[in-house]
Length: 243
Length: 142
Image 1 (cartoon, chains in turn blue, cyan):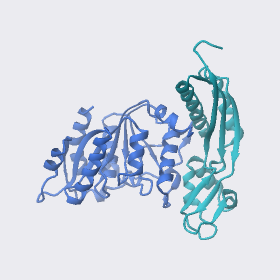
Image 2 (cartoon, chains in turn purple, orange):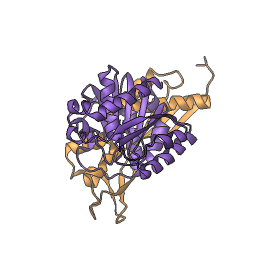
Image 3 (tube, each protein chain N blue to C red):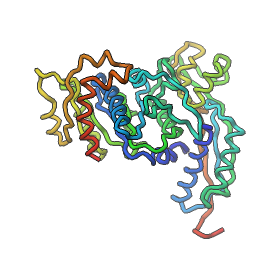
Image 4 (cartoon, chains in turn purple, blue):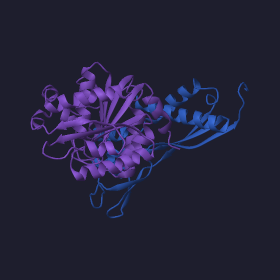
């Protein structure tokens, strides 16, 4: 028997809401969305945690300009605080080394982190999900029972096709879906709104492609002044009222 | 103290099993895999301490500890070796990082034959409950 599974619920019991930022496709802006959402929530005064579950390509620390820091031990491990956010990531243990780990090991590492991390009391835990609908998504659903999914897509047919598959799986598994968000919106291309609404889930809004975003990566003050952050703030209003 | 978090898992699992099966736990057998490099004495002492103050269905349980050598098998060339063989190439810091998340072994260890980080941890990853023994229990019974 795996003794770690029985304590995960205890570790998460003082967290009011867990928002898993997913979407299936890589490169649609899940990590930036999760990072900026955590920053905005923290700025609004919510006690916020941020968990980077993308073990093979962790990037939240780069977006936040945070250096990997070995978490302090206290009856488990305590996530280091970064810009007012309790931040946990595999980079605290892997540093900037590549982490060549496969499915079963990814699952084991996820269980380990969830079993030993003491988040304390939080209003929100934002989870940056890796691309794909395999191990990490299934583990998030299995291990974080109160997780609600926010799906990020672009207007691209490729991204929409993947997000449709993910949605279909989440619906089948009766997972709570907050809604979908179209990122990198191009005015001259069709919106994802119609297609997403047709799938029966709330469409949270569109964020226009922001050329200024790249220049603000690693600098949270700049990040919070981007048009991307401005757009996400509007979406956040809907997330907060969806409780 | 990371060991406490793992010990809590053992007690929580034992209690869950006791509740599920209507038992009072008499014995818990814990296997300690070498890869996680648990501080054995600390872990045993912490586990015994928290068991004493747990629910009455668990607090009198005896704990039996087993140690398991960690064995790794390369997925590329098939070579099998023990963690002990790789220990000499690891710094104290590497061992500490593997202690927290044993899968970090893939970063700090390579197959001694072909160098690949693509290996399987076939035995001795970390803490595991081998078995839980119990006796029938009704609330209020000694």
